[in-house]
Structure formats: C-alpha cells, structure tokens
Length: 239
Image 1 (tube, one colour):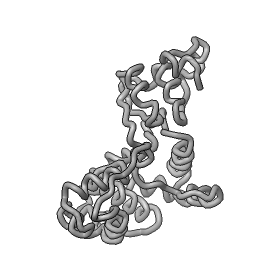
Image 2: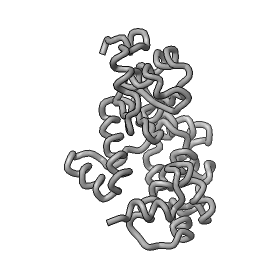
Image 3: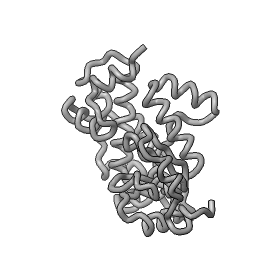
Image 4: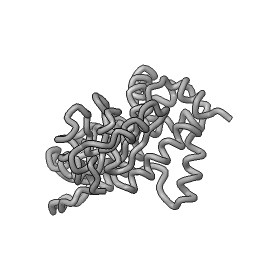
C-alpha cells in the first residue's frame, strides 16, 4: 500500500523481472496494480478493488478491467477484488485443480461459502433506494428452484411484484449483475455440479440446468470454463 504501483503505476526492475515466466500469477485486491505494471495484463481481462478501479483504468488503459466481478480467471493470470474476494479466488483455484469436493471441504473448514453469488458491485458503498416492492432475494430463490423452467424477465418481475424496469434496476443493485447474466451463471454452476456428481447424459444435464439442448450447454460451458461438458466431467471426476 502506498508504493509506486498504486502511486504512479510503476514497479521496480527487479520485481518486473521476478514476475516474468511464472506458470501462474495471482493477485488479491490492489495487487492487480503490480501485475499490470509488469505488463502481464496487457490486453487481458482483470479486476481489482472497486474503490481503486478508476485509478487502475487511468494507469492501465490497455487492460480489460471489469470492476464488478469478485475475481477473473484468465488462465495463467488471475486477479481478485478485495481481501475476501482473494479467498473466493483461492477456492476457485482449488476447485479448478482438484475438483468441487475438495474445494467444498476447504470452504467448510474455513467457515465460508464455497461460492458467493454476484459481483463486488453489491458491496460498493452506496445506499439501495427504498421501493414499494422490496428486494429481489425471494425471486432469486425462486429462480434457483426453477432453473429448468423458462424464466423470462416479465414473469420474474411479476413474481417480485415490480415493473420490469424496477426489477432490473433493483436486481443489478443487489447482485451487481443483470437478471439474465445472473441466471446464466446459476445454470452453468448447476450444470457443473451435475457433471461432477452424477452420471446423467449431457442432454439431461442441459435440460435440468435450463439450457434445453446439449448444444446450448456446450456453448455456455465453453464460454465459462473453456471446455466441453464431457471434458469437464473427465477433469473434475478424476479419482
């Protein structure tokens, strides 16, 4: 804190050299400034603490900064938001390397959730506006219970007893994401869990997760984690 990486976006030559050629580099919170100053984030997606995101964007315009997410996994370079998001990232790496069962065991040992919903936008210091319809938590619970059903925006807004516009705004304020993006992430997460813990065929996994077809599941899973369903299953069900 208070070093040159945060003051002017630079690091020492020795540190720059030390960061090159590493098989995996991870940062927590404003540690992303150090990685960016080393040139490891040029043209790549990344995140950092929401409070310092504007300064990060000024120092490193070549980085594809996303200040709303808890962490970004871009393969060999991973960045996270605040300190707690560093724990989320660490669990994600355990999950990626050793599977969900191990990650869930670690989460229980650390007394923390194995996965936090939404992004860091929900933690930004700004009051939520009062509204007659209340929050969207009950509707999010409803969505999680009906992932295999068609869930259009109008129906979800009706469930929350809000207009579509109000529901969309409140949902983003509470989760940091649009309803569609949040729902897709929950469906991907459910599909991953089914692939990891069951022998269901890909078509059935796709149906239960709400993607409808194996083709749709394959596209979404590849976008999220970079592999096809069967390859994902082979990776995360190894003994």
